[in-house]
Length: 117
Image (cartoon, rainbow, N blue to C red; front, side, top):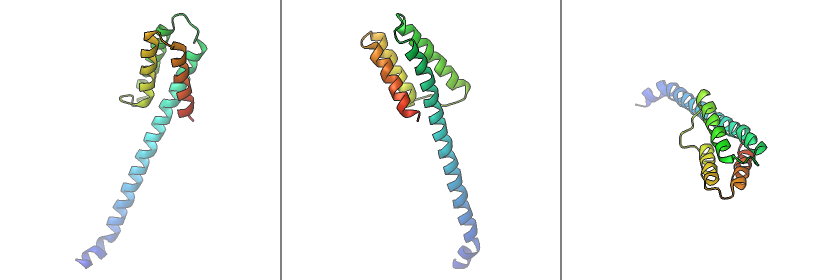
């Protein structure tokens, strides 16, 4: 058994290194994707901030949100059960209620500014 381990030790080390490199690559890819999604969210929240005093704020929010989701889809970025979509949905629900609509948009923009660094 010791002879077998000595002869095949390099194979085991090589496999562990390959697995580690693969995990690292997958981790970097996920981190890049998350960063890209937050940056896109910031881009669209800036559009909302420019039109924050619009009388049709709810319709504007829905339109910009749908553009954001379409761009995520076009870039093939994951958008199911993610925080960057949850903040948008929360903002839309708050604006729909009509309570503190401007504050909800500002909070969305502030969250995007912090996360997209």
